[in-house]
Amino acid sequence: MVECVLRRYRKKKGLLENIEDLTNHYKPQLNHLGKVALNGLLDDKLDFNESELRNHAKDLTEFGFLSVQPGGSKLRQTLHYAFLHKSFQEFFSAFFICSQIQSKKIKPEELVSDPRYFVELKQILLFSCGILGMKCDEQVVALVKSLTNEVNKSEGHGTKIVLEAINECKREKSDFHSQLAKSFGTGLNLTYLDLSCSGISDAGATCIAEAIKVNKTLTKLNFFRNDISHAGATCIAEAIKVNKTLTILDLSGNGISDAGAKCIAEAIKVNNTLTNLDLSCNGISDAGATCIAEAIKINKTLTKLNLLLNRIGDAGATCIAEAIKVNKTLTKLNLFRNRISDAVATCIAEAIKAGFK
Image (cartoon, rainbow, N blue to C red):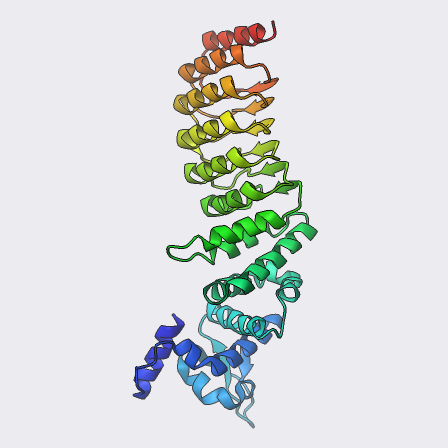
């Protein structure tokens, strides 16, 4: 977008179009614009005086990122400007911050220590990660490590922003963002991570799954109500296969469906640390329940399984009943509010009795 605006400016001025990277060509002007933009956001101002543009005023007022605002007095007319859109102001603020980081005038840890970058200035932080991700691996890795330290200090608060920041660094035909996710996982030293109702969706779930693969401290992970579909569940399942510390996993209130349940089932066949798994309210029907039943026959560590509020009918419940007969570890199974007949419910009760003999 910035390149397009700058090319339009040069075309309007009749200037040569032989410069490939106009953002770099106009870096001094854009850096100054970024400084003005950041100061404005830090002071909760959306407009500024022309004098703040200093010796770059002529270029910056003609580039096409600003609009003239009413201001000044009748005696002394002063031009005031504002960004055409707040996203421009946030982007140029990030552009300036990245320049400061690259020139070592500020450190990543100094930036993220300001809590405003996790709330009202969040978009600046995300833009900064994206810009650094295209320019310097070392510096964006340092920024993610600093963000991870802040998450540790706040006992998980801000995790969603870290996941979004990592996803801003996606590159075509590259797994760099996956490497960043693993860096986050390695640095995370919490035992409980509560991501309930965070809106992380599949993109966030995929990112945190990469972190889980290498993390060695998390024992409890809560994904309750996050719009995670079978795609996100598939990634989480792959992580469960290799993770050695998680004991409690809550995926309730999502939409993993049968496809996701099948992947989770395959994972718990080989996982030997999970003891508590909550898959309630996930749109799982007989097909998914059948896969879970097969996994229960093999798994030797799961003690609690919650399948409340799914769409499991008699066929799926019958498979679960057969699995219970051979499973020796389950102590709690919740199948309330499914579509199971009294006859099959009786079979499950008989299977439970048989399991305790």
